[in-house]
Image (cartoon, rainbow, N blue to C red):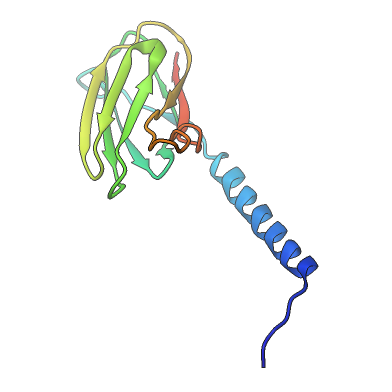
Length: 138
């Protein structure tokens, strides 16, 4: 005995799935910013996970004038990523499944976009698919 679904049932199901995806994305966007602690040696250290089109945490807050050490870990198995904060001259490639440490000292306060500009031609870039975040310097 088969189940028959008319076109309106299919459209309704697709609409429900899209609403659920939007709800999941919105829930992911409400995570609080991560305030990077200052170590006893004066270095601000944080680990950022690079996954399929996402950074975790996606909003990082540091203090200006103090060294920052970010451990970037890609948990993807095929796609390489990068970590770019153009205004702070930070650009680091991270191969699939690898970990890289990037060190810099932000001197200028402000809120800057983090993003991955990798892409497989002719597909949209990872940033276009949502791989972006915020780096805040206070």
